Length: 376
Image 1 (cartoon, rainbow, N blue to C red):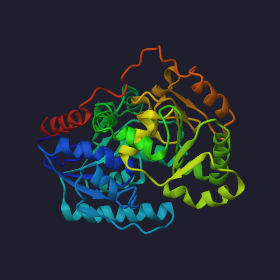
Image 2 (image 1 turned 30 degrees about the vertical axis):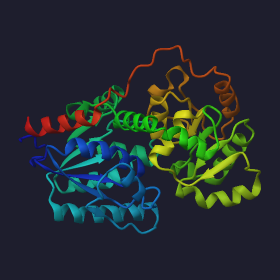
Image 3 (image 1 turned 90 degrees about the horizontal axis):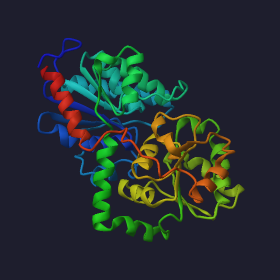
Image 4 (image 1 turned 60 degrees about the horizontal axis):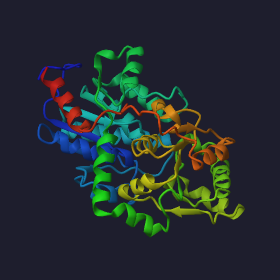
């Protein structure tokens, strides 16, 4: 076990950092794949602590309770990041893992990367190399810093590998595919087998292809949060189908004043929903409207047309043949895009789709790549 970028071998004890909902989902697949060869330690940074955004997910995903659930008081974003770094650093010094695995692009990812690098620990970044070319995005800043600190970069797409090559990181980059491939395939198979996808639609009183799914939560959406959210909802209220909106806790404070200003009867406001429920709704929606990178991928995997409420995407392959379309604020093109999807003009379903996110068994592939790296 001699690959030691900083002179430290990655042997058995692996700390997996999670903090946000997409990381819980991906960590569940990765945890199971790593278990035979490694002894994973799950560290929850506390970034998402809402029961519906965190605790319920661990049970649903059959993911063990974290060995560490770190407290994270409600403060400014910068203060929360500082608290995360301090808390994660203390855990790493106590546990002395042989390496650290971080996933995605959240502040939890950045905190784990900084702590691992400062501690001289072997660092693996899963979902490395993603670039939106928007350096104002916190997630983009987190991706770039984490990639440049990491010893092993597990890339979800070939485009991600090429992005890292342009930044001089090709020696550490490996194409593995995206964990969403495993997570979505496994979950949908279970949902359909048990009939839970149709049960979900019945529970919300909607029919396949006769509703839209809407989410908005990103920090840059908050800069003009109330106005952007109100504009999007006003447009969606004028469509001929109901819109289901699972509300992220971050956006709750702005909804009350919006509801007072407009008729929201066409919008069904939901609390955060379990992973299986969200996939069921996404699977049968006519269209998904979102600012989420994860939902863009999942929409593509489920062949549900997507409208991304941003000026850019870190998943440009989803734009091919119209499966995903960019629609930045103030969302002037949204009515026409919605109408085009409703008429079946978008996307081009005749065009052949390339599996740019890789084939199934991504988690096992990542585990093998890590194992090979530490025994090379």
